[in-house]
Image 1 (cartoon, rainbow, N blue to C red):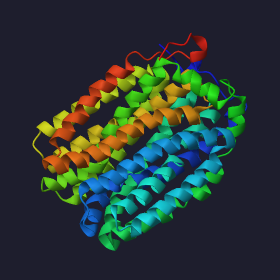
Image 2 (spheres, rainbow, N blue to C red):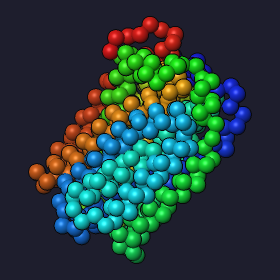
Image 3 (cartoon, rainbow, N blue to C red):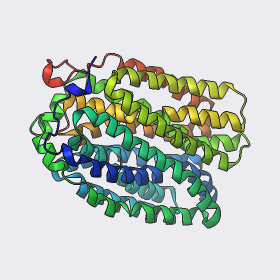
Image 4 (cartoon, rainbow, N blue to C red):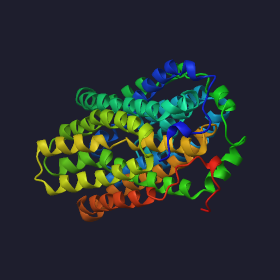
Length: 412
């Protein structure tokens, strides 16, 4: 069984000062992930106010996710070369500008450019990929997946905090007031980024390919890199579909909008447990088999939810169960990338893998709205999302978890 303790590229000189960086990283992820998690609450409000179809709003979120994935690769390379602090600040500027533009957007095109492109770049520069690129270089290898679990749990707790507060802000100040409030909170990342230091120097000391191009060629030439890419694709498809469309799905069934907010908040709360558990288990057990089990478990939970009589309790139970597996893939996938390919270029390589996640996110957001507009229900969308859980498990089974420096490359 491959162990994180055998991972290449540990940061011996920087290990002693990594805890303060982890604290700042957790607060940044709380804000960044919390702000992006509440889009499902804006969907019914903005479409009704602007006279848009659900597909119009869903397409803007789909654009946001694909731009997020593309930006994560470019910004990840920037973080590897010039440090995460500058990258986080740039991302925060994009994020704030996107929310401000979204508040005044009156057309679907304007929404796609502001809430889609600008917010997508903002998330790409402030979310897990950039933060974990810094944390992965500074934390000792034997604590790396654990630290990723802590950071992902912080992001999930942000989801738990933002959902009810966003619902209350919409009720009290309207959806525009809530969007402006998001811009103000996200601007705090400009200050928090000052606490992310030392990753550039630690990365230069880590083992691995000396240039970005060499690291990318080495990874792309390995079959396991492609399997990780398409496995993460399913993660994006599933979580974005549920996060964006579950509140509207419940509203269509006669449930109050507040129940959708509660459900996504519960997902975030229980994902704290899931992420901490995944980070702890990922140090001790095979990451690829843990990931395969998570994807299968998600599909089983969705099937049970759809077959059970719909009630407040069934929604709460579904949210709690799904929360255990929500973002628990993040520390395991990021940890596996660092374990196999090293951390010297973790920002770039993690960003490429994450682009697969965002292709899935694009489809989960857009197809959910498209299928609803075509059929009048989400039934076929649920079936699609469930089936892909089995696909992800199959993708993870053949992954070779040994560090690539210790084995001959396998053709893609």
